[in-house]
Length: 230
Image (cartoon, rainbow, N blue to C red; front, side, top):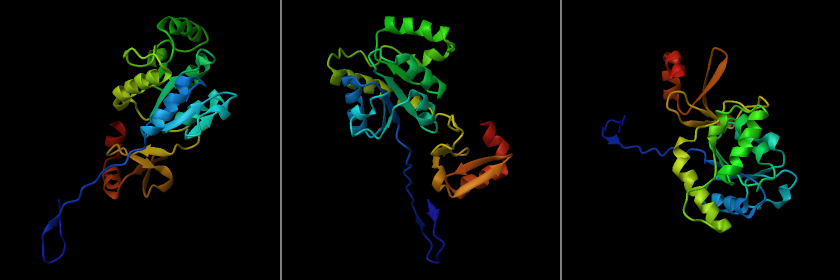
């Protein structure tokens, strides 16, 4: 409720609806399950990223972006909330999991049996991956709804993504190559702010902070240590 400044008095109610960037659904593999995940994810309003080494031309045209090199995955994850689904049918599972963990992914689902992941886990640990990091990998992927077809399996996986979506954090403050991500987090209110179009910024101890409005910027400038610590 905001008071009117004209002589007639009165007030006006202002309703604000925040717009947050969509979840990014990263789907690795050229399998029917992967194709269905991309198509259903697009329908649900997610940003879909297909990862297909050496086979980017096979990705559904509806995908928002494609990657042909798993090593580019950390950069693609930076500055976004991402769910990574590995549906390669055993072709390059380890490469995708390692790159996703390097990029800070906290939600990784593997379309494979628990036994298959346990053997893969041993190989990854032997290659230098921190065993604790591998706790982020869910195997097998999806809720247990007796799914059998590729379409049903994709639905079970997306249902599990929905169940965990609220706990998937924004990844990173900068990409592996050192470039800026698309979005920053307002340290005062927690809103995501598009860096390229941000109108309210402040420098503090060599770091640039981005704000959704002048009010948040003013509050930060009065007590920056308080918001940085939080």
